[in-house]
Length: 488
Image (cartoon, rainbow, N blue to C red; front, side):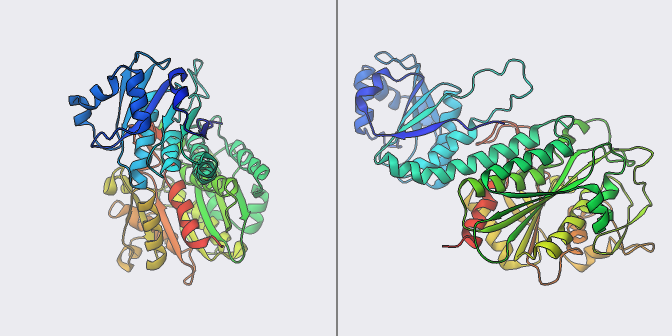
């Protein structure tokens, strides 16, 4: 399990800067205002800091970016890192500055002087998030990021304020680890075991095995896993930190998706280890809530399956019966995630009686065609609930864009042989998938569907993560809980 860089807060100690190792870092505004720490480092480095601030390279630096002065004279450190940040930065910019420092410092120790800003916890969050590296299966794991010390006024109070941010970082890392694991490691059984370990944090965890799923009548979910040797499971995680009906988070957990009998092309199929991304986000949120002792009731439910072809696999043209009782004609076995979610959504409503529901899934390639890798698609039957989530996502800097629902799209999933079919064809593919799920949401249940196919794992570095698993959604959903479901 990957742990974030250790970050502590300490009193400002200018006398100790000369002996600090790794990277000594400063926050400097556009005007190049010299704080007491900046003056001290400038004297120690024989004027190198001021010369750097007058340089063309510094002039080209944007807010939230950093530059290194390597091998500074007069210091034990390998480099002085100058981070451009205004005195009253936005939350997003403070996090960006922390991430830039993480990139500049690599695995080296960091000593950062935080002078003149109250955003130290957000700087720390950016520093932690950008330091992620998934090395579990590397022979040469390299250096783990060394600890960082943020020197600031009133470090005890800042540390207390930063604890919630560090809980978010741990939740994001948990999600990234799960999404990054290969399917021969993260089987349905291994996944369930990792979720059961959340019990150590106070989460109540229940695992429903195949015999129980059959007894309940989850015919849609079980149909997906028929071709696999890995048993299908549903894991329920309950965080009881408040009163009243819970918020339900529902995640698609397809640990590997071949497409089943409707086999995917070979090229790129190795990326289908991330098809459990929705379940990974739910797990990360539950870990975050437990670590920060959130005063809210939240239940996470994930359907864990593997979609494989075999003599036992569901075939195109088969008709299955969902937990709700509706029949589904399986037109394409590669449209499997909605079958998993249909049963888990219905079970969530029947068994947990939530106040509202959010489901997450790497559901459709059509979502990537529509929105690329910048935004998740947001579908909802409740304008107020959707608005609350979109505000939370914007606050946390996680891209999200609302998409339409409507009767015309629902017509595309009608069929003569069953109550519905599991795909409406290529036109509006992400929308018809959402319309399918909507049939398993009760009329009075506020509901959001998040299609995260384009944002769960991407092929380039982002501001807060190296290429690969992003952990998108942990921060936005944690914020949604804070804003709408947490109790005083």
